[in-house]
Amino acid sequence: MPEIYIGLMSGTSLDGVDGVLVDFSGTKPAVLQHSYSPFPPALAQELLALNTSGADELHRAALAANALVRVYAAVVSDLLTQTGTDRSSVRAIGAHGQTVRHRPQDFSTGYTLQLNNPALLAELTGIDVVADFRSRDVAAGGQGAPLVPAFHQAVFGRADRTIAVLNIGGISNVTILDPGPANASADSRGDVIGFDCGPGNALMDFWCNRHTGQAFDAGGSWAASGRVSQSLLQILLEEPYFAKPPPKSTGRDLFNTGWLSAKLAAFEASQPRLAHPVEPAAPADIQATLTELTASACASCVLSYGISSKTLIVCGGGAFNLHLLQRIQAHLPSLSVVSSEGHGMPPMQIEAAAFAWLARKAILRETASLPRVTGAKGARILGSIHPA
Image (spheres, helix red, strand yellow):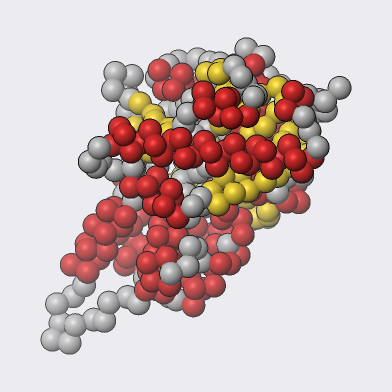
């Protein structure tokens, strides 16, 4: 008997919405259909703007949430149409929302905020909606992120070897899966490590768009044409976040355009004062350096916590950046760096499928968080349910 859920994901890359229709009746989740809808440019711009304080934020955030949910609803409609699935066959939708603040500093002041209107999504689709997955973990003293390592274990975990999984969206995160039964319950796994590495595509996409007009550096070809500035890379890597031990999580609250501007200013100030000034790094060189920053940060996390793994499975949009994967492979010569495509699930489906999985856990009233990953006081049921 099929057990059908929908997962929706719009990440820090701010490119659009990925949706999947997933059947959980088998031993492992089976994606039946994938749909993608890009954000209208005005919505993408507003979602980015709402990551920082501005005028009339509450009103603008509410309108952006409604616009986001209408994109969600269109993706849901496409999934149902493409598969001929009646909405009554779908148990629930897992809708992550769009993160605009993520500051889980401590128990008294920590919070995380995802723009969403799950009541409107339930109204538009006629399907139960599960949303707000991170808040309960933050309330329990956790980081509220990353939440996908438990799903990584369900999909990629092996009983005979350690597996490392690297998700490269706007922000990158790593999961280390030590040997153990892949079907163990989420709250009983003590052998999963996961945390945010630092920037993924966000800074590269910003710099590429600014200098080429393209939304992203396709295949990393522009970065490959430049030369890495080791002095700039060193300044970037001096960010204290990289040296923090897990559990830890981050986002555009830290790794944003203001952060990059400050680092570039520090780089320019560090150049020797000569009679003939050194020519500043060309835009392609900075793109190469930002790519190397992501590669170095991700590889360092794997070297620190997952060196016993022989395989690094890469998912997210960064899995299509061939130059980035080559740079990660260069830092990890003893591992095989491969796309998740060859391990049963294409890169752009994994996070959306994870939120379908989390929605199912909420509907079944099962815990889905991993305290060792987030630092919470214990495993919690994640998500609030909005009946259709």
